[in-house]
Image (cartoon, rainbow, N blue to C red; front, side):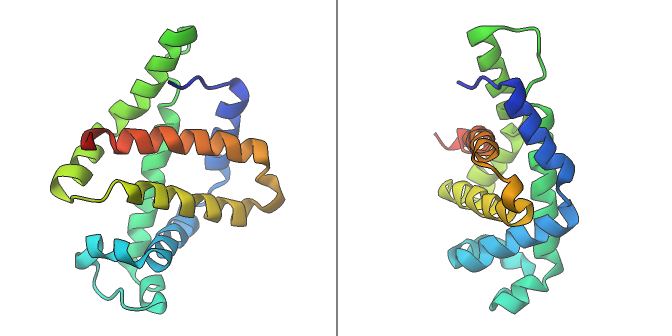
Length: 163
């Protein structure tokens, strides 16, 4: 159950407003595939992923990273669709907005691609590193707390089909 404060919403929206998807997306997916090499097994159609340099220069890796960030942007835009609800009802609706946004994606990853659901957390961890590296001192503990809360809702939505 998630209740977003106005400050948390502002932090998340600010992160996305400052994020250059065309730079951060490729960095994100390169980091995932290099740091967690077993995740490469899901990207057999991406061609050469045999070295860090090959991964960094792979246009399909870069493109997928950008797609992932746009998907997260979609979650951000759906984190608070209904602003008139109060208390528990609002919290449940907020969680459902993001979960509904990712229903088809959850089904794809669980049923067709058979991606280990733990990989979503790894992806989130790598994105947090990318954000911290890019935002430096602006990535305060309060902003990170809001970010982690956002990621936990997204990861929950993506793993929904698994359970």
